View 1 (tube, helix red, strand yellow):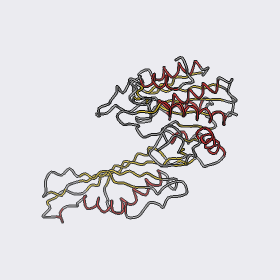
View 2 (cartoon, rainbow, N blue to C red):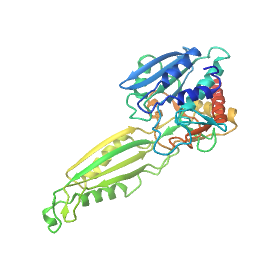
View 3 (cartoon, one colour):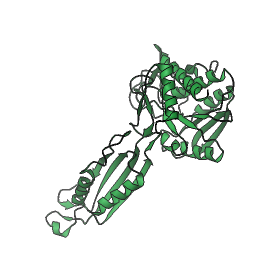
View 4 (tube, one colour):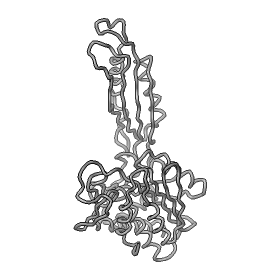
Length: 375
């Protein structure tokens, strides 16, 4: 890599690594090599089949960390205009899987760090937490690296997750929180029987319908200052009954709750069990909580981030908590965290892309953020 202050060459090199989760395909070695050229100490951390990387330069505070992922989603069935792993630039636009989400963001931060370090050692510390498991189960990635960081005294004062957060224009949104997510699989058990003799059966479909009605009869909440109302959505109801004259022995459903900071996963789990028990004596309920709701309250850290974006871009970012989940949900357990990155219009799509000018603008904004935090 000849010019690390320009994010384009590194972004192209990363895209050319076909790092579809859980494969790394050399992506983290490319990144580690670039960081070592800048003076970072790099520590590869492999858990299970997942390659992760922690890198740091400087020893003191303030310590600002950039978190991201080198893994990408599959190419998909749609036809691409370009090779998704070629890192091709056409008409000033960089194409490739990960260009937007989020190899481009990683390259922009490295370019910002290179520019910052060109003026001398940092007044504090800069680190990167890079996982290869963000698009996958997220078991052996950021969660495990954070545990290692805590055990080794590497927890930062503030973390920026470089996900593509901006909906329309670069600089227009910062995520300061995320909703929690709970998935549940419910099976209601009844007694199979002939439809002509319902008194001899116990219809689990009827019980499941009553349960669904009870769970959706009223809103979970009205929202709060930073979050929209929580939402419970049934995503599937299945019986698997091939005939019309048999009451089935069981009926199943799946649901998801995206919940705000008024709730916890544990409290919602207890509520689900209590409501279901009112309508069914026999049931199985499997619950998986992929993340709790979190909020980094606006204050000095968030204000510094916001002002740095304004100063570098001229755009006033909206503070937001919408969208899906990200690895910020894990980081929030250890330190204040916010998310800021590219415009996310093409992430996970065919012909994923980012204008080269936008990539360079993001590097300039990240440079301003480093200057603001490490002044």
